[in-house]
Amino acid sequence: MYSPTLVLTILPFDTAHLAQACRFAGEFDKLGMEKVGAEFLDLVSNFSGSYFIVDLEQLHFINSEGIGVLIAAYSHATKIGAKFFLVRPDSHVRDILQTLGLWDLVGHSDSIEQCFSPPLSP
Image (cartoon, rainbow, N blue to C red; front, side, top):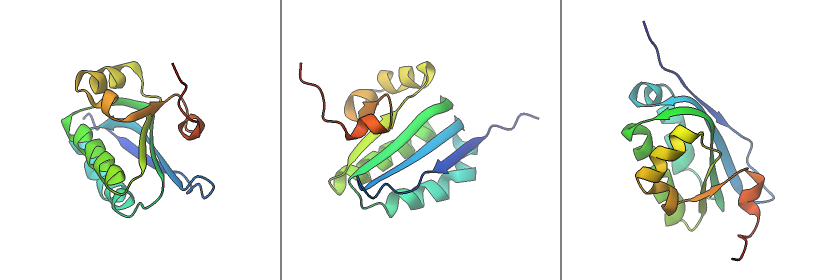
C-alpha cells in the first residue's frame, strides 16, 4: 500500500536575524499534514520574529491542502509584520505556486541566507 510522507524539520531559531526556518520534504497533502500539521501550525502560531522561511527543496508534491497551510503561515507572518519566504522549490512545486499566483505574492529565494540580503535594484 502506498503511504505518502511529509517530514518537517524545524531549524534552530536564528537570533541574529530573528528568523525561524523550517524544511518540508516529501509530499505536502492531506495525509502528510495529518502527520506534521499540528507541529507546523504550532510553530506558525507561536512565531513572533522578523523572518519566517520555508525551505521546499526536498518537497516533491503539494496540493490544495498544503497550499492552504502555506497561505495561513504567510498570513500570520505578514499580520505581525514579518517577512515570509519560500526557498528552493523543485520545478514541479514552483510551477504550482506560480500557477496559483502564490509565487508572486510571497518572498522567494535561492537560499535561506539570501533571504536576509536586500533585494537587488533593477
